[in-house]
Image 1: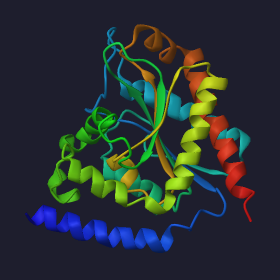
Image 2 (image 1 turned 90 degrees about the vertical axis):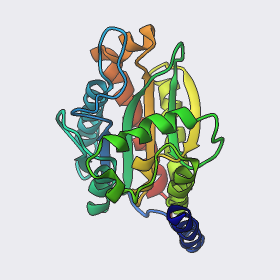
Image 3 (image 1 turned 120 degrees about the vertical axis):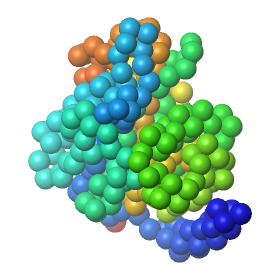
Image 4 (image 1 turned 90 degrees about the horizontal axis):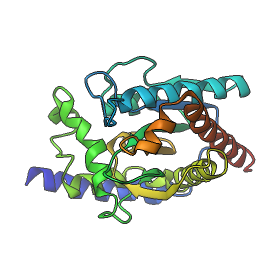
Length: 259
C-alpha cells in the first residue's frame, strides 16, 4: 500500500515537472557518458560458446570512447566502467548526473531463442508488453545489488507499476532520446549492415535515473550463432562502435545547430 501511494504521488509530481520542462532541451553537447552494461559478478547474457555480455559490451564501449576522443578533442568522454567491475544501476546514472553530462549511452547485448537484430531503447512505457522481457532482464540486475531495497525504495523491478514510475521521470528528455536512438538504429543498418528491430520505449531503471537524453542500445543477440560470431570479432566490434560514434556525431550536430 505504501509503495502504491508513493507511486501515485510520484507520478503526479513528476508529471507536473515534466509539463513545466517538456520544452526544455540541452543547448550544446559537451559531455557524454558511455556505459558498458553489466560487469563483475553480473555477467549479463551468455553465448552458446561461453562468451559473456559484460566483456563484449565493455570492448565496444571503450572503442566508442576512443573514436569520440579522437574526433572530438573538446568533448568530455566519461565511462561508468573501464574494467570488469560491478556497478549498480543507480550509480551508473549518478556518474552522468554528477558530471552534468549531456548524453548517456548504455551498451548491451541481447538474448533470446532464435532472435537476432539490433534495437535501441529510450525511456517510456510505449508498447509495454512487446518489450517487457528486455525490461525485466535489464532491470533484474537491481536484485544483485546490496541493499537494493534502500536505493530503489523497495520497488520490484518486475512489477509494471515500477516501470511506469521510472518512465515518467525522463519525460522532458524524451524527444532527444528518441532522436539519438533513431540515429543509432540507422547507423546499424547503413554502416554495420546489421538487422534492425527498431527504436523502442520501455521503463529501464538505468535510464530513469539520468537527467539528460539517454538510450540503452542492444547491439545484437549474443545467443544467436551468427551474431555472436560478429559481435565477438574485432571487426564486428569496430563496426558496432563505429555505428554508435556516427550516430552520436549526427546527434551532436543536430543539437548544437539549434538556436
